[in-house]
Each structure stands twice: as C-alpha cells, then as structure tokens.
Amino acid sequence: MSESSLRDAFQTALQIPAEQITDGLQYNSIRQWDSVGHMALVAEIESRFAVVLSTDEILGLSSFAEAKRILGSHGIECNGESS
Amino acid sequence: MSALEQLFAAEQFSLPTEARRSLLLAEVNELTCWHEERCPAYANILRASGVRLPLERLEDLPYIPVRLFKNRRLQSIPDEAVFKVLASSGTTSQTPSRIVLDRATAQAQTHALAAIMNTVLQRRRMPMLICDAANVLKDRTAYSARGAGILGMSTFGRDHFYALDDRMELRSDELDQWLAARRGEAIFIFGFTFMVWQYVIQRLLEAQRRIEPHGGLLIHGGGWKTLQEQAIDAATYRHVACETLGVAGVFNYYGMVEQTGSIYMECTHGYLHPSNFSEVIVRDYRTWQPCPQGIEGVLQTISVLPRSYPGHSLLTEDLAVVHGVDDCPCGRKGARFTVSGRIPHAELRGCSDTHARSAVGVGW
Image 1: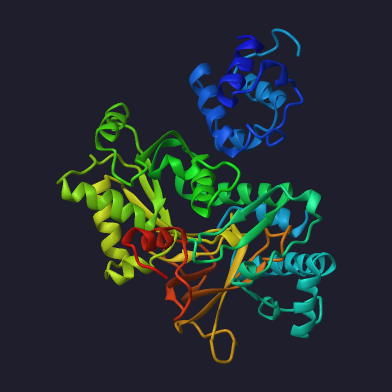
Image 2: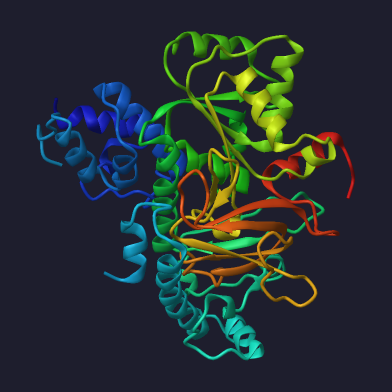
C-alpha cells in the first residue's frame, strides 16, 4: 500500500487540499483536524485499510508521519513516495 | 517517576486508599503551588484560606465552589497557550462555566479517561450507538459539554451511529439497518442519563420494541435530577435499560466539565469509585468538616489533572455519601460512594438535565 492511499484518506476525511498533507501535519494544527475531524479520519483509515485501531493508537495518531508509523505496525507500509 | 506518572502507570482502582492518597497529596501540593504562582485569583483564595503549603493532609486542601467558573475565567496559563475552551451545559438563561485548556491538560484528560474507560470496555472498540443527535457537534468552534462528552467517548467505539434526529426523534428505520448489519456483535451504547431514558428507551417501549441481547454495555452520565423527579431510581433504570437495549451491563458515571477526564465510574455493585487521578471528600454543610462514613454531605472532588486552570479541588453542588473505603465487594479499592442529589437551590445543570428543561419547556 502506498503513501498516496493514506494521503487520500487524509484528504477525504479532513477535506483539505493535498498540498497541506505533509509529514509535519499535526493534530489540531489546522481547523479541519480537530476532534471531530479526528474521528472522521480514524473511520476513513479503518475502512480504507481494513484495520481496527486500538484506543491508544487513536490517541497517539497525532501527525501524518505518526499515521504512517501506526499503519506500518499493522503491516501496512506507506513508504511509496516521499512527501 | 513523578507521583502523576505513578498514578498513570498503576492499574486503575488497584491502589489502596492510603497509598493512592500519598501520591495524590504529593501531586496536589505541587499543583497548588503551580496555580498560586500563575493565577492571581487563585492565589487570593489560597491566602484567604490561611493554609500553609505543603499540606500534610488531603482534607486541608482548599476547595473552590464549582460555580466560580461561571462568574469568572480562571486560568493558569498565558492566553497564547490556550488550546480549547470548554463550556459547561447552560441554557440562554444560565451562565455556562468556561474551562480553559492547554494541550498538556487536554492530553492528560484524554489519557486518564481512556485508562478509566478501559476498565469496563476492556480495550475493545465496539460498534457504538450514541443516544443523541449528530447536530450536537455541528458548531465545531464551540462545543457544548454534551458535544465534548460525546466526542471524548467516541474514541472508545467505532462505526458510530447517532440514534436521534435533529428533533430528538428516534431514527427507528436507520437504527434497524445499523443493528442488522452488526448482528452478533456486542454494542457500546452511550448517552446522557435522561436522554437515553426519554428519547431511546421510552420510544422503544412505546413501540413495543427491544434491541436483541448483544452482550454489550450502556455507559451513561450527566445527571439524575430530572429522572429523580419522575421517581426513576438507579435499579429501575438499570433493569429497564438491560431489557430494552439488550445490554449485559449498565454503568453510570459521575463527572463534570470542570474536571474532565477523571470521571467516577460505577462498579457492578452500583457504587462509584475514584480513579487513580482523583479523590472525594464529603463535607458537612454546616461545619465544612469531612462527614463520617454513611452520612450525607456536600461532595468535594479532587483531581490531579487540571493544570491550565485552578480546578484541582472543587466543591460541587451535589450531595453524596461515602459508604466505605477499600471494602467494595467488586474488588475495587478506594472510597465506595453514591451521589444522592443536588443541594437545594442549586441551578439545574448537568448535560442531560439541561436538555430536560428545554425539552419540557419550563422557563427559568
């Protein structure tokens, strides 16, 4: 699975343009990624990658880079293209 | 490890009161100095109380009336560090409390809540049925306490379904479809005490319907006052909820927006217990001395989480009874207590009760 799929998930769930999605993108750093956006993002990631995240993972999903790491721990590598 | 780290690291409800209290005391001594240095209004209160720091007993910790957060904005952080402001339940005729959070405090609250919730959810994230309307989250810039409560709890479920529409009507057909797609799975049902009862359970009963038993849980909180007026007690509530919602367990929690995160969770024997992050002291309303066990008084709640605002020791407007300490048959350590009601003349508040008042159209 490539990074672009995760990027799509962020774009769809948070409704933000692709260029805003970088490794440095952090929870609550933009208006769209607030706690409501966070729940939408979790739902999108879970359905798109067919994973169930733990509570700790949801609370720890604090940046785009961290999302890649968490998916990696589920055996889903997101190192396709760099950001 | 700091006292706070130890409280996070220890299994919830496992610490005997004496051990927990000594960690809490170390933490609140530090926290009290923190607020004294950063919040002038709190420093005044502390000075007026005449206590000397460090405190030797938790009982000596000054408490501030929860109502003070309505009258003024109390904060222990500079304005630029404000991350979120929570507003308590309040209708137009009531003034909401304003609780100022920075990132660190918000994060501590979230992690504390997760630790407590996991003791009943056992780290499962079940499909979640929310007994509320999705529009409670519509205004993303200013959450009500109800919205914040729902959002905080949403983390612990998945495939969220809001059971009510904007007019508080049960979405029966959509609910049937949602349940059908999850047949065989345990469901986590969440809502505010009054709203679960009035808008979901009562509607199901009227339609002579019930949700098939699924082995899941109902967790509810937010105030009993309106149901007490209807003479619905906890045992009746639990029984009817199990019958109609198909849950295997019903857990009431006690908490308030002024101390988000460190909620008190009911055990299977119907008692509330403090988590590792908090303590309760019941005070005689004439002498303000701690009441003996079994005697009703005004509830003071201590939490080690509030750092961005001086809310670590509050005098609530609720009456409570401590029935015993470290002796609950459920095995949880700590005080075993029940909340018996509001002190007379307290404003109607609490997430579910505020809605009750507007629902029945009573003016204030």
